[in-house]
Length: 55
Image (tube, rainbow, N blue to C red; front, side):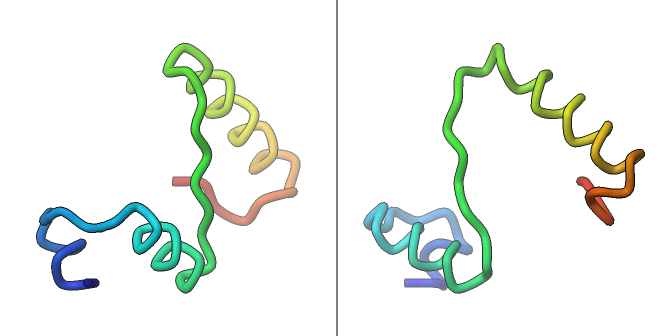
């Protein structure tokens, strides 16, 4: 399943969520129009020392 995911093949979405969980990650779904707001908030958090990195 991980090989399929890495190579862009079709996998069950539940498998994607499990892979993210295993990596200590989560998925956030929001309207594209809101993405710049999240980017600015994360940049502010990095400058304030709340986050060590943001990529």
